[in-house]
Image 1: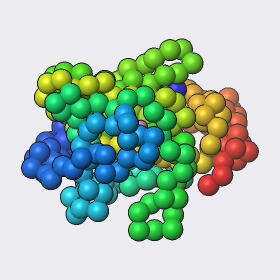
Image 2: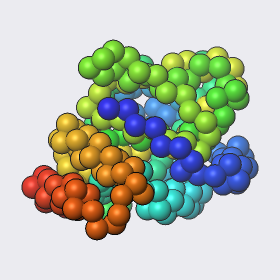
Image 3: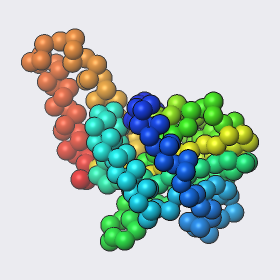
Length: 227
Ligand code: NI
């Protein structure tokens, strides 16, 4: 399932990020492409080890920790440090599936990619093309969100970024290992949690039906979670 999450960064934060990123030293994305990605990847990336990438990445992680919709949808156990990319001048990324397990550089920690995330850092009217297209059970879904918004999608899905023919598409992207590996189970928990959240203001806090539903949520999470 493709889950949009609005306002992970405020517009003011996006402006701050962009003031720094627009001056940054962007490198050819091929440097970090695996053998399969090499033939389909045409973009630019920020050096992961650069102080700028690390600082902005940490700021994104802090914001995600305060974004209840992200927590509910991803049930994160580990998050790969956010990376940054830029597509311009026809840049694109052909259809591919993300690697399953990624080692965090400079550490012994590996992250299994259950969910992929793209946080948009350019407004849709700043560039032409650059849609993130994700193949799912109901066909291709396309995402080109407002700056500061993020989309989550299963890392197992085939996806691509269409050519950016004008302007520049700047984004952060990263992967999440979820406490609940199975996508269908995680989606059920997300739907249940969101229903409970929307029912909560409508009933008394000690309403037995609400308590029971909340219990079902936590007991399913207890069954399925591998923290
Ligand atoms: Ni990808």
